[in-house]
Image 1 (cartoon, helix red, strand yellow):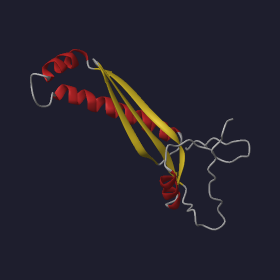
Image 2: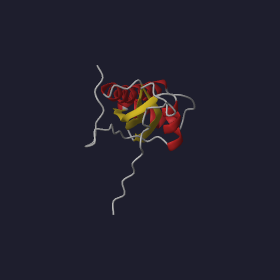
Image 3: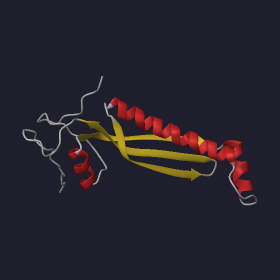
Image 4: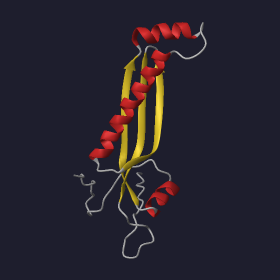
Length: 140
């Protein structure tokens, strides 16, 4: 069962997103609505393999399969955590996913950030449906 989106005092649904204005309206035109910004993160220790691999990296050319496998595992873990957040919001998918990989010596951090969307079947040109309002608060 899908969770309800957060509502403000007026009862309208609110969400956070990193979509551009044109991406937002394209999604809305196809019947999708953003439900929230979601992210997943993983920090992996490269351990002994990473230390040896980085030492050999300068001497040998080519791929070090153990490090590649660790990177894939870390990426899949971050994407899986992002997907779990999207499912909690009742999303049908995640768009505009950005992966950030930060090597830190024997550690590696991977962060996945995207906008969760849900199909609502309402297109912006449909009569009787109020289009969403974009609110940008300005603090003085």
